[in-house]
View (cartoon, rainbow, N blue to C red):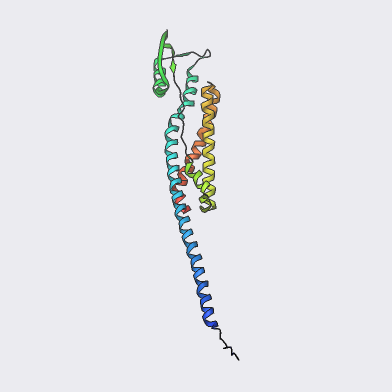
Length: 218
């Protein structure tokens, strides 16, 4: 006759093992979340540094080209101001000299014919060009393509999106201005560049404000 030995279950040991496994799993999850959060934060900081550099470079580029481009519509308005009804430039040497000095970068050569009474008729060749403003959005686009821009916070994200939208408007107006200049449509050129100047002024203000505040996005 066989006898079966009763085996007692060590529930305390089993519960201890389960508890240790539970703690281990939760620690692993916590560490993974912490590590992921740390990586995301680092990527976020890098993205913001790159965007800040991009905005700062765009600001310098815009200020450089704007100083030249602002003179283009002023030159044409000034030229119209010294022409008579027959589209002739008949003014005194002093007046013409002052005009040429102010807009010297647009003149190739100037010839004159004396008319008497201190007036001269002027003819010449001019060369007017528009500085193409190279405004980059690479850092911003990369932050969107990687999804890291979702970590910036609503206010920061809203301001950045508005800034780059305005930047696109400036670039579109610049394209219109170059097309008007190419077509020798001076009236359209002056109108477009007047509007572009207003947009650029707003963009410079947004650039400056974002450079000052972007560190708060971290």
